[in-house]
Amino acid sequence: MAIGDEATQTHVLSTLYAKMKAAPAPADMPEIFRELGVSEHDGKLVFDAGASLATIRRRITESRDDSVAQP
Image (tube, rainbow, N blue to C red; front, side):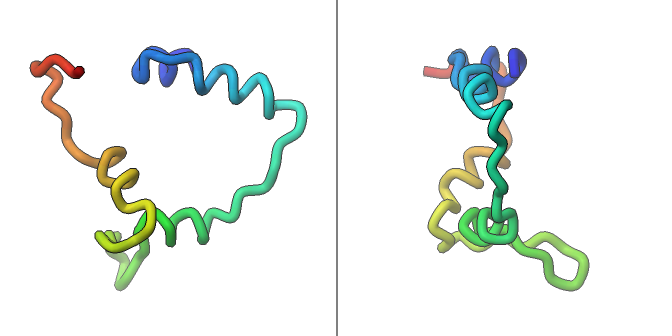
């Protein structure tokens, strides 16, 4: 959690973990992947740009130039 918090310059992950560690909730992973626009066809990952959370998926998967200062 510390690495994720450092990367995002927040305490969101450690705070969320502290809140949820004693009461985990199931996650509907097939639905999450559908909303992110991630699927598998013929053994290959396929991204759907029109999915409801495609913008978030792009932010997660896009390349980042670490030499450029982030705002």
